[in-house]
Image 1 (cartoon, rainbow, N blue to C red):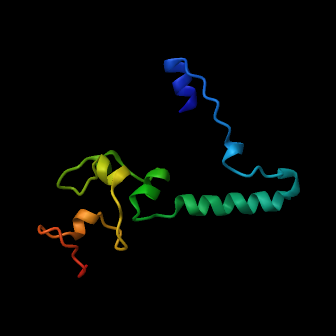
Image 2 (cartoon, rainbow, N blue to C red):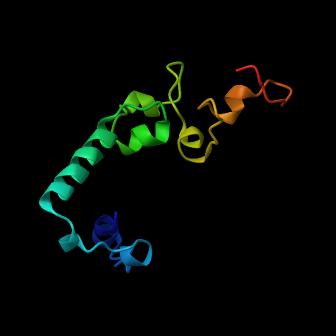
Image 3 (cartoon, one colour):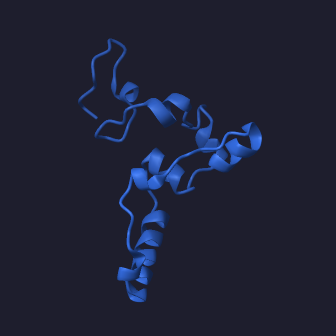
Length: 105
């Protein structure tokens, strides 16, 4: 995204990930450590999930998953603003028309 902003809008970002993370000294890890970490990362990234946000990050969604329609697609509210309940549903999916939360699901 930073590269796109620079190309499209001539905006040079000053983002430094080291301000938000802890830098690792990669020389402290053996080749087998790196291979094991890569294997674990692949397992995590390829595991199917019912959580929309994780599925989106893992590239497991098709365009129809984004379209709000009778096929249970998701709109922008569902994707980025909605709060998921413990049952992995949007809050409005567990609320009856009176506004009371349905606790039977």
